[in-house]
Amino acid sequence: MSKAVVVAKPKKEKLVPVILTAPLRLDEIVNEVSAKLKMMPVNISRGNLIEDAMSTGCLTMDLLIGGGFPPGTWVTVRGKTGSGKSTFLYYTLRKAVEWGVPVFFLDYEGSTSPDLLTRIIGMPLEKIMGVKDAKGNWVVSPLMRYIQPTLAEDGFRFMHRIMKQVPDKVERDGKWYLVYDKEWKDDIEGTKEKPGYKHFRENGRFFVETDEGGAQAIFFIDSLAAMFPESRDEDDEASPMAKMARMFSENIPMVKTKLASKRVSIVAANQIRTNPMARFVNPDYEPGGQALAFYPDAIIDLTAIAVSTAGEKGKGNVHEEPCADGVSFDRYHYTKVFITKNKKFSPYRKSKFRIWFEHKGQSRGGIDPFYDVLNYMKETGQVKGNKALTITVPGVWTQRTWTYLELKALILLPSADLYKEYKFKDPDVRELRNKMKELKESKDPKVIKTREPVLEKLQNKVDALMLTKLNLREACHAQILDSTAFKMYFDTLATRALQKAEAEESKSKDFGE
Image 1 (cartoon, rainbow, N blue to C red):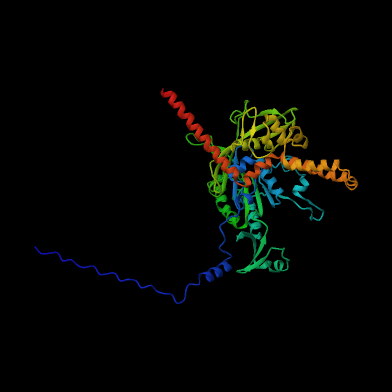
Image 2: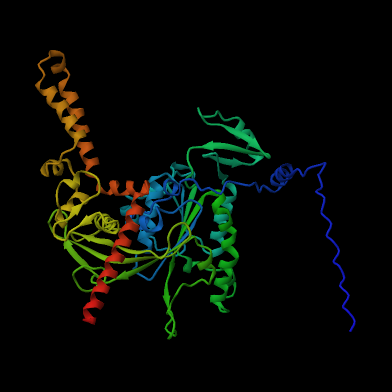
């Protein structure tokens, strides 16, 4: 037999490294392209998500979504009729007004209640929406610009063109800058810089230092389901659902892509409807197509629930209980919250709040602040007991146990008299009272001469300090701002899960025996 011929494999030649005599000028290329296209690389940091976030005005909601709505996000609040969507929008709007953030309210439904809006925001309508003179000039500048668009595309164009005019807002080395194009050169260079602030030029754009990284503006939409496409206005018979879905798919990217760079937010309400033909799947759906599920950074589902489902005594959807002063009754209904989507924090969180709609026979309206504080403390494990409530939130309220009505009065009707009645002890208050005592007992003629006005000022300080010390709601909100609330929340969830597992294990053992 002939032997097989083995062919030796050729040896691979080692590659000799090539040294570039002219290195690639990547930085110069990027700067040149960025200047032409106005697409500069930015720091992906969003700053302090909680400090810069827009609070919802509801402690429980802020806890669930991670401190509030960060600037540059789209948030959709969905629910059926009576679930509290508009009320929730008004509360977030109130916080935006309090913080001085420019607000645009796009009311497609045309159902905004001026009475409810003024009650929740706590200001007269003239101050909220401004006042114009006969020539159309603003006499009182508006805190909120209220707009009623006719067609869906008009609202998207409005938001898009507003954001095109608003400068970018970027972070550099822990400082925030507004970025202007060259057409602003004369305005910027002619402006005197604040002490400690600066502006500089880069790639033909001007960077002007600003105070913080909060939202530059916030748009509220009520509601997405009421946005009427232009194509349907021209042909009101053919494929209404398909035209609406196409309209959202085409127009949402136009505004969504600008939110982050401009640090502008959108909070939109939408309806949840029921499909009576659905038999084997969830019959509830959101009108408007799939784009409304893909683009939002957070989706919050609200559902009106029965009193018994909320864990309270009673039947039906209306809950009655005594007022904080013990005279007459308050009426409420409950809403379940479920965070369906949340890109900034932990999703699939749930809780509840209640809406206070009647007080002593008068319309009230709004999220109940007492129940909000109580539920927040339950979620974070800082209140124990049923009839006698023990609070562990740091403050004067840890000095005693509380009944339900006493705690309700503390939150809804705080007063200096309440502080004295419960004999709270606080070193800051004691120090001011000691100063007052020394003044009253002094026999120095110079002190006696000026004693009365000084005593009056000190008394005002004492009263203001006592009200501050009694503000349990602000103490809870401070925990959200310093992030301690979230650790307590997750620790409480873990403890409850462990207790539930132990209880189920105990039941299974008893059954086995």
